[in-house]
Length: 480
Image 1 (cartoon, one colour):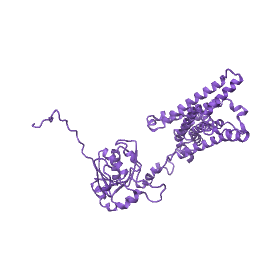
Image 2: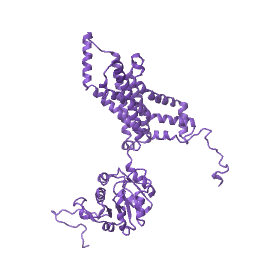
Image 3: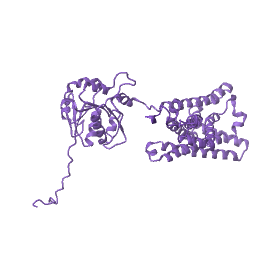
Image 4: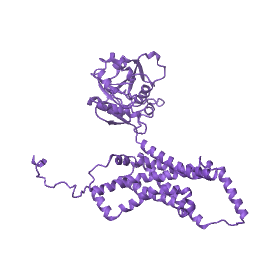
């Protein structure tokens, strides 16, 4: 052999790095922010990009990364091998009609969003498909922001909803989204493009009900505190307690809201169990309101954790108030004036230590529930572990929270002065629903009910719901 196996090179000359061949050419019609971000992602993933602008001379130099060719719209379409992105506003789609012949046979990706919710007209993608019947129109990448496109070439934490009536074009975009580091989701034909276009317009769609319930609970308990401790004493005795409104009244309402909201997390599960026991089957659907309630338990739990966390911060800040210093000085003055040398009360010491300990433990368990609700943490748990944390530890957090409230109240509920103006203490109102949930859970834990509920959830049905076992009955598919 005349050609050596290893090519010799000078010792001081570095060996050149291998260059990867250029990838497929992707065309982008439009030179706006989304086009720039998309081109950055495509170039970082190994693609060659040609951007088409109505007036390339007006695009500032350096706006697009190196390696991106800036051409006219027609040249960009001609330079693209197969896939072309339409990164223009829907009201300008009619200006692209002149490119109809050049776009024939190519995949045209629509990245636009809807301008408003609940539209009655066709979607933007359907309008684009009507303008370009010879192109494979695909709806994709509209749920991805320009910032997410620039977040890195292999950021696989973002989903891309894709729909199209052309299976080959859809397959090409699915493969492209994987190359870009996204997680593609096939949502069907182009008829689904209306929902896909409206998806970015939703503002926390599953949080509206839980936030409203939490806000109404806060208004109720805050208003109850205002009436019982501020308004009525001012009207009756002329006491000025309005200084309690910014901090003290809020801190009285927050734990009550946290406790009731946490009870609302586990109350629908008890209602579902009672319905299944009463029906004797699991194959009947729950009422719509119960279905929605069951699907909102995670949001209610996180809002309960938020209120509990705010209550902890507010409680720590109570001693920093100017009013707390004045109250402490007044109490010390009265003690000195009364000649009391030792104000130690054993019962109050036990009460404060117990309710603080239960509160800290309950808040810690509630924090663990909030952390495991994160997808990155919950996905690391199997189903049994997740159920143990969310159900077993959840009831433990509710029990500790109830104990925290009971130790706080101690025997105060049995004293006549605890009911000024015939209004009960607020913590008694907050305990009603959690105690109902805990008692209901204890009742369902009875062996006679637990065994029956387990059988029902494993597919057993009572006699009135049991299907006939005669497979040769007329009309049965066994006769065919």
